[in-house]
Every structure is written in structure tokens, then in C-alpha cells.
Image (cartoon, rainbow, N blue to C red; front, side):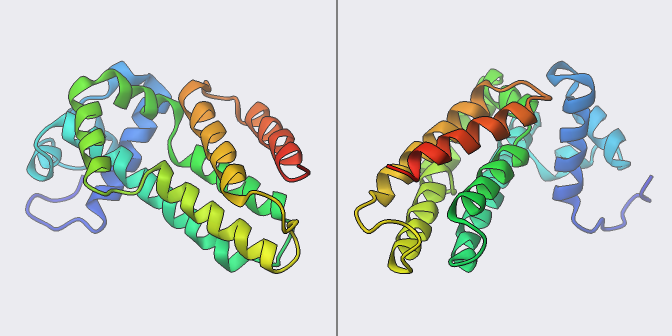
Length: 195
């Protein structure tokens, strides 16, 4: 365990990763501040020192993972002209789905105070699906300019369909469905990119 009074590098990420492991291993009902700090090998009260409570912690975890996903989507710009358009988009979708495990999404939806804090964070400008959609649209438009996507393709509609489907998969998938999700995404991209 970390000694008392000693700063812990990357404490937020350490606690977030610990919470994801607890929920993945033991289910949402097992998530308590004590379970998180034990998993993170921290002092029992450290979570409450940095967060107003477990609901704020869960909301911050979800907001952090969406922000990370938005950054990953923005990184699509660096992929313009590389691999295939479908492969690049598939990577972003799978990264988004990996960034929020199904159990954590369920936890945020079943804890009313955490859901409210998450919604307030999005309303205050925290990156969410709209930021991801904008990044995907910008990427598709850049691929259009490079001739790798037909000029008459509706980049905004493709991005909306892709991000909307990703949202659906995120909210409805069960743990261990990675292969089905990958297949579904690949099929969706084949349809979207040939229209």
C-alpha cells in the first residue's frame, strides 16, 4: 500500500482503472469506495479526499473515458491516406467501445446521481458523442478531398450513423461480445462506405 501522506502519481487514472477491474471482475454491485481503493492499493479514504463521493467518482470516470475517446477520434486526422478508410473507422469504434466497459456504462446508468452528474458534465461542454461525430465527419471530409471517399458521399450522415450505432452497441452489449461487435461494425462500415 502507498504510504500515508505521499503523493501518488496519476492517482485519478489509478483509481479509474481499479474501478474498471472491480466492476469487470465482481459486477457493478461490488463497486464501493473501499473496493476501489483496495484494488488500487491506496489508503481507504483517498477516493473521498479527491471526489465528493462514489457517484461523483463514477461520473468523472465516464467523463474521462469519453474525453479519451474523443481524443482518439481526433487522431483520425493523422490517419488520412493511410490503411483503408474502413480500417481507420473500425479502429476508432473499437477504441470507443474498449474505453467504456459495459459494466461501467451500466453502473453510470443505474446510479441516478452519477447519471445526473455525467449529464451535467456533457451539458457543460465535456466531450461526448457529438465531439466524436465531429471528428469522424472531419476525417471523412479529408478522405473525400484525397479521393479515397466519393465526392458525393454524405460525410455527416455516415458519421452520424456510425457514431449512433456505436452508442447503441455501447449501451446494449454484454461483456465478452467483442467479436460480435467487431463483425457488426465491419458490416456497418461496408454498407456506409459503399452508398
